[in-house]
Length: 190
Image (cartoon, rainbow, N blue to C red):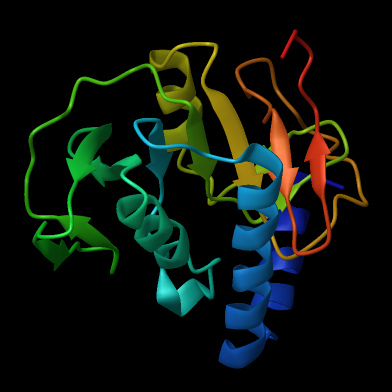
């Protein structure tokens, strides 16, 4: 299927989930991530903040876990492109013009070496190719970080269909975490 078709299909499937279903699935996704990757104190994780109106995975569960376990947390903020802001338990947030909660700070951490980059998506295919919202922020971001940073998508849905219009600048994920499994697309040595 084409990205535009997949984007529409999976946006509708996501909207069909009740808030209780989405929360329970989010909890399982976080559990699967922690069980598989076993993040430890001092590691650096870049994680998106969910857009509630789009019924995204509740990554606040990740953020709370990481902060409680002294794992460094970085979140995206759009400032002429995507920057990475390190957050702490007392970080102040505001709502952007897109309705996304972002840190008030516009100071880019300059960090490019993350252990994990938890990535938003609407769909991911069996090759790790993702369909996002079509703005290209994460493809640009992936090019700016260390190739050793593990790019991990999180989704309510399994990768059953292939994306027919993948283009050369699309950067595939290394892993996909669903509520039932962790799939690896990683091509290098672990």
